[in-house]
Image 1 (tube, rainbow, N blue to C red):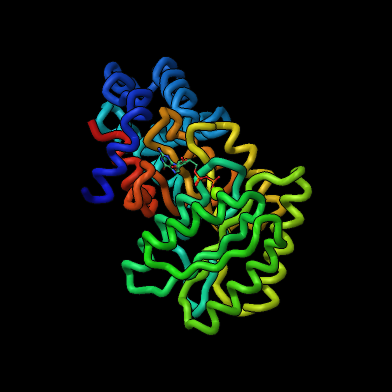
Image 2: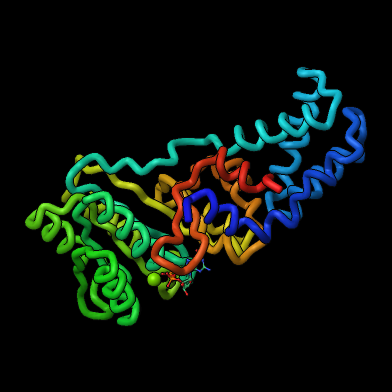
Length: 301
Ligand SMILES: Nc1nc2c(ncn2[C@@H]2O[C@H](COP(=O)(O)OP(=O)(O)O)[C@@H](O)[C@H]2O)c(=O)[nH]1
Ligand SMILES: [Mg+2]
């Protein structure tokens, strides 16, 4: 199955909330009902009120500027507005140095370890030498889970004992990556510590080690968000954004939710590009994000 078909499948539940046929059924450019329904549709899909209001505003403006008369024209206009909203930065990973680093952050259970496994698989398929670093030392099971993914993806793997210092595992991983000529180091992290401040301090410490040992390396810090948590996920993103210096978002579990509209809220309120979406638990269920395909898959009937 190609990426588009997987995305289309993953957006099935969200699409039930986004019925453009109905929205444009009795379209008239000056109908207040139309704008009300538009906002309601976006809020139902969890795009959030600020984003729904922004789309409403942009839609009214374009309707006036481009003199929409027919539902068809307005529909095309709406698609352009929503696609434009998702255009907030480079969705491709920048991994040009050897090694380069991907640091995966996010709260417990969102899909960090799984996403690392899927991404490692894609990178090894591209012929890259990949090393997985078990930076979640909070539970022994976390390193075991990552080790299984390393094997499946054909990646190298560095771990320490449970409870050891994650920054030390990161340091060892960087040394191993240099010695073995790895192209990409993927770092898993714990999503839960004794409190939030501990977690943020630990991430900052990991980041200092990377910057010290690999000062010229490309580093992607990706925050993993569980789409099923909708607007709560957005609050998490804002918290991490303040302290962790994010370069993008991975939105997982799109397959299990009708809240896929959260993508628009992330772009609009956090100004961060979604770089990948997860649409299942399998190794191939991670799709490079592209705004145009996303909107297309959302609106395709
Ligand atoms: N349906 C679905 N499940 C996912 C996806 N990504 C991760 N999961 C599941 O979410 C659960 C938690 O994932 P895990 O990677 O352990 O989360 P972590 O605590 O952030 O490392 C696991 O059962 C995964 O299989 C996804 O895109 N879709
Ligand atoms: Mg994990």
